[in-house]
Image (cartoon, rainbow, N blue to C red; front, side):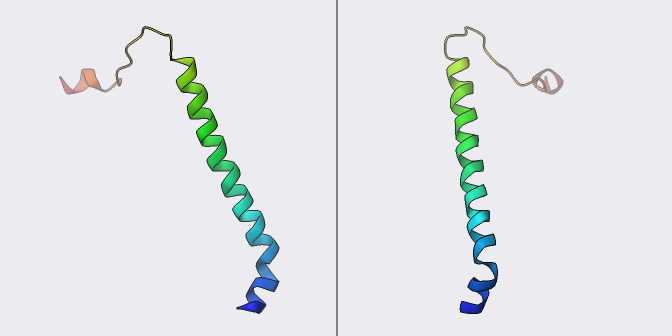
Length: 53
């Protein structure tokens, strides 16, 4: 196990750093989108709704 961590330690740290950045970016974009549509009086409906009825 120690040999594995010595060999791939930097790569694992970099991988976890990238994962944390991706999660933070996802939540940031979601927060920005929610703020953008906060004061808009438009009801959003899926495009496929017409096809079902």
